[in-house]
Length: 271
Image 1 (tube, helix red, strand yellow):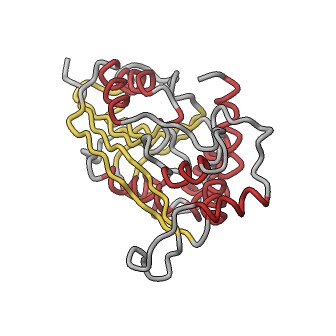
Image 2: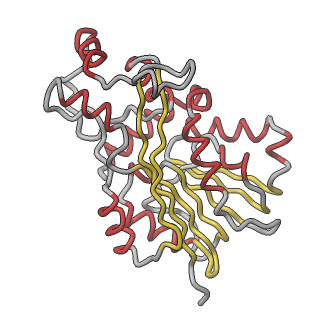
């Protein structure tokens, strides 16, 4: 990924830092589910790559927690959250935060018992970030990550495709491509599970507002001249697949968004 694209992603997530937790219910639920794979102890030294606002701390315990992210805004919010929460402070003995690119982690080899990342690596070269995670993980340690796959926001892609042929939604890896990139990193998954999460919204506008609130409105290779006008937004509302009465959850909304999520667990062999 080019430096300019990394900067764009960083800027969008920094702008969203203050609103992130209020809109990140799916992201928090994925972290909670992924945390069940963690082999934690009171001695665990944990690295959280793409930590965002450090929501993993709610579901983990150990000795040291180091959160790194490319976004300075997210790191500031995460640090403030820890400093202002007695409950968070009880979960680890030491906390630290570092601005870092997952493609080039600035940490020594064999430094962490657990390397964790949730819904961050879909923006990255999966092979490269996995190689970095494996490098900094201790022998006998564990890597647990989640990432979004190609069928994420399929309904939104379908709706935009009815309007024009431009790129409005990110194209993530397919299951097969993810498997290939993991193999290219020379690691083996003990867990490789794909879960299709769904969230409901009152309207397409509400969905797009949430994407912006969590910083996920960055679209790589989007034509900036193809802005979403009010008229086009109304067209999008008209063509977006609607839920039937049977499918609706009470008070949840009229449309659904799909999030195809990969859960993966890797153990680093003792040397």
